[in-house]
Image (cartoon, rainbow, N blue to C red; front, top):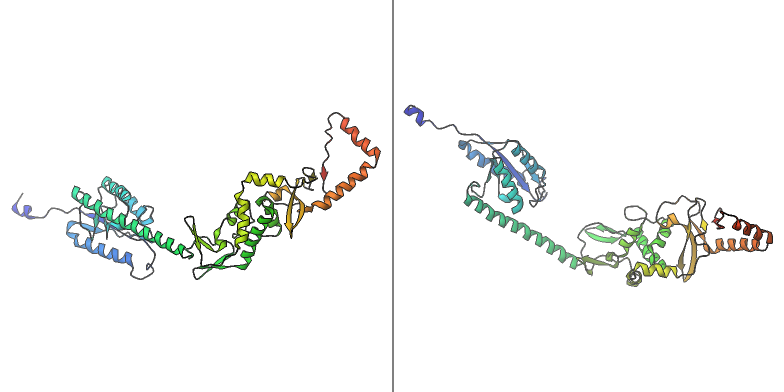
Length: 383
């Protein structure tokens, strides 16, 4: 080898550099030059300064806008990892290490992936080498502060929400039936509020969601999503303290900025009923005056008609309703409900007329003696 050959520089290995950028919120991303562009510009300038070391820019963009650094479930990051595993990237360049991750555990997984594929990680504003023990120590220290900053931000947000709820402010989420949002405040929607009052009043009168469902369906009342009420929707509505004009945060209720829909006395009556155990309520319902045709009355569709009742202005009104309706299912029977007094009166009149005819009594008694006949009487409502 000549002296001239020894003076020639060795051939530099080409290192393909991928720039990764991230921003936690979408604020400002619509601008012509945003935070992602600023990060990328700084990283590209750093790569250009290392051109003599063989650094070349990978022109694929790996930009995650509006994505938190507390998760690895990011579209651009997934593409970057896939290209690393495919051997298309040698160096990952970021503006700051917290752009890549704010979690120590997640970053450890990323570094492990980088090491498996001989990929170097570089932060433009925080110079260190991940291939040395001191570089890894520096990296862990910086990541600890990044994770600490993320947790502090989370605590601040949670404290702000708690303070806002304590002041009765609406902080977002599903809007309850009976309200709408105007200027970030709950405003009473009279159409939905009437439905809410009807549910509370009906439950206070009947003391049972099962008995209330057919009433709500007969009146055509629906939930916020436009679906017929079921038992779950009824109980969820009955325990929502928003209707008292309160704001609830982590089990504590505060006076809200919005108007109440339900008065306190009605709320107390409903929750006095809910405080009873379901078995006690069922036993109390069974203790009511027995229905004469319980288990004997069937509709034209062959389904049982079960007794129910409602109370209006202190008077008790009894009905027989299809069991399918009581359970909240569809009902295509022509008779949704029958007045208990009228149908029982008709049956009693027919029985009195039959009992006045001895031949009918004898004819009825004879099949009872016939083997195989159970003698049961089934009444079918065809009126």
